Amino acid sequence: MSSLLLLRIVWYVAVIAMHISNIFYMRWFRRSHPPSPEHLKHLESFRDLEYRFFTSWTFILQIVYSFYGLGCDLVLLKNSKKKDYRLPSPIADLREILFSGLMWPCTMVVFSVFWGLYAYDRDLIFPKFLDSIIPPISNHVIHTMIVLVVLFEVVFRPRQEPETHARNVMQLTMHLCVYMSVLYFTYIEKGIWLYPIFKVLFGTIYFWIALLAMALMFYAFYYIQWPLTRMIHASKKTVEKKKAKLDKKVK
Image 1 (cartoon, rainbow, N blue to C red):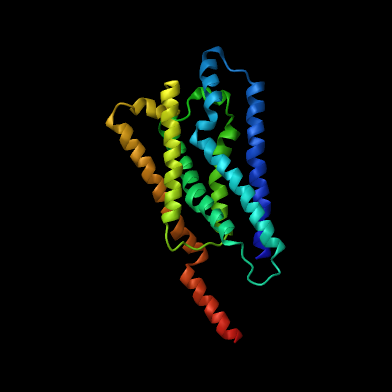
Image 2: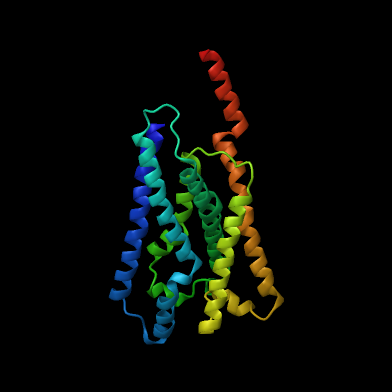
């Protein structure tokens, strides 16, 4: 148990360092690589709106969760000698909501949609002019490495599927509604869609189909995590049976 805690603590520190150093690296890259005149207008618009992109929300969520997880595991490590010590329910519940209800599905959708569209036609999601503001290594940090972050959490933090998914699903739904409001508000305010694919599809039935498909992806990825979790850590019933057998042997 202590070894898992130490491993996660080191990992959380590494994730925080990765994302924060990447933020500073991207800012340094922009200053040291002035954009060409034909791209200047697009890049200025991107700088003004960069924290309205869902990718930005997701890597910031990973930073927030890593700080929270680090704090939780430091408390668990401090009390590791106490038999059956557990975090207070409100703290443990918030950790589960942040990861299960938000970070996992958001990360998997960002990775899948970004690289899927990038492979099909990069101009629909990541136009070439962005290469002068987001270098390849930073692109992989915010669109590829984020998957390793959530997979590590699934593998190295034992969890059980909740008895009801209502709370997590409600939190995810609220998160998506807020983001859709930001997306539409940006269009009303600036007259632009944050993602080129919406500019192409807007005004057609495919716009709504695309939104529905992406919304379904969030919920699909949310539920996919539980068979994966059971496969790695066993179900709650299996854990309880093993614990009952051990208690009988002790008696």
